[in-house]
Every structure is written in C-alpha cells, then in structure tokens.
Image 1 (cartoon, rainbow, N blue to C red):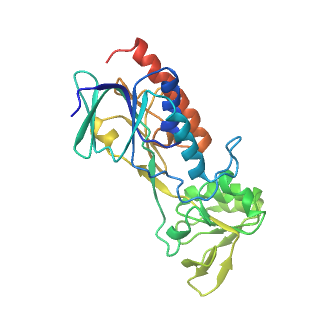
Image 2: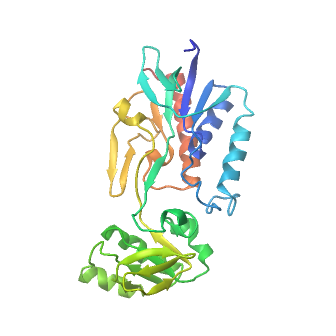
Image 3: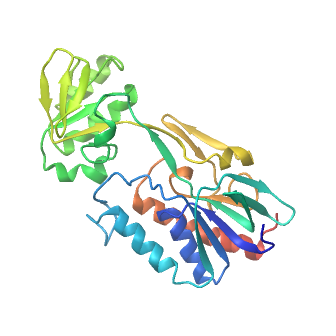
Length: 298
C-alpha cells in the first residue's frame, strides 16, 4: 500500500467519471481513476443525442475523452476492478488487485449492468437491433416497422412512445394482459397487439412466434431491468433509491451520497441514462467534489 493520499479516487472511467475528472484536473487536484473497461453502451455502434458527437462510435467518444482528461498532469489512470471500498481516518481506501489506494474523497461512477429478457437471440442483438432508448436509436430505423417486447405492464411506456418513430407492434409475450384503458390507449396510438408468445429472435430483428409465424422489424425495443455494476455502494452502506426497473445511489443536488465525502454520478446515480446526461452529471459531481475538498469535512 502506498502512503500517498489522493484528493479524489474516481471508480469508473466512462463518460461520467471522466467528466468529473476533467473538472478536478482543471482545479489541479490529485485524482486517481480506477476503471475496468466495461462501458454500458459498449454493444452499440453509434451514440446519438449528444451535441457535437451525434452518430459517433461511443468507443471513439470515450477514447477521445480519456485522452483529453489524461493531458492534465494531476490525473492518473489505473486499469482494473475496484474490489472494496471503506472509510478510514483520513478519508477512504479502495483496493484493486490486492493494492490499497487512499483518498480524501471518493466518487462512484460505476454504472449499472443491464439484466436482459430471457429470449433466445436477444442478447447477441442488444445494442445492434434490440434497444432500450427510443431517443438514442429510434430515428435510425427510418420509420420502419418497430417491435416492442413486453416485460411487464411497464412496457406500455415503450409501446405508447414508439409510434412516433414508426408503425409499432406490441408483443405481449405472456408478460401481462392490457386492461380496457390500456387497450384504448394503444388503439389511439395505432399500436398493433400481438399476443402469441415469442420463440426466438432471428436474422436482423425477426421475431419467430410459437405458432411458427415470423414478424420482421427494422428494430426491436425491450425494457431491461438493471442492477448496480459494482458492490461498493452496498459495502459502504449508501442509501439507494428504488425505481420500477432497478436501484440507483441516492445523492443530493451536488451529487454527494448519504455518506459524507462519497459522491456518485452517471447511470449508477440517476434513473435516466444517456451519454449526454452522464457527462452533465459528472460535471456537476466534479464541482461538488471540489467544493467539498475546499469547504467540507468528513
């Protein structure tokens, strides 16, 4: 273990973590970023909805962001998985590969892990022909046929949104049965209802139903649940906020968690997710951390 104490350890070097690091680097703060290289959107070929970066490979955005951040001499990068985090007398300790790293403040930008529906052929098409966010991927379907795969009645949200991007079929797949009001709303949006269960997804985005029929789509949308990608928030006993598809770390307006000195940002700390939102969240967390270093106490 090194005796050196960083100002901030950032766990997670994707868009949110890098954005926070940029603010801290510009404030000439000593920062260690620990990252295991598993961006949530690594399955997607293009990122959309982020000004100046629309349509760019998300890996390119991440690589350029890292290159720019690492130009600041007070920022260091460590590739690996942060295994444990704990409070110490001087701040916090994070271990990775048996090494213990110390800091005055800690930022969790660890992201979340999507829990995909158990449908044959879906996992290998995730981010390519099966999506979660209409704003991120709907436009590129060019108003073609769209399929929405139900996971529960929460999928009504997708089914009612997607007709803005193309003719929509709602595949109930035995997940639930719409009530009279829901059926009325679906009809008002021109949504076609398909009750026959799904056998598998084949081709680009073809649905083979249990009765043998094949329905072809330009793209599919499925509501995936998620879980925190790292155990650190649980280890530290941080308060979480429950929402219908998963839990995120609770933070105050400046992104500080329920434990003084621990901040969180990005997908792990907000229910809505996009590259643009992650960057903004990280920017705010960076400012919050700097303010805490100047004026806060733990």
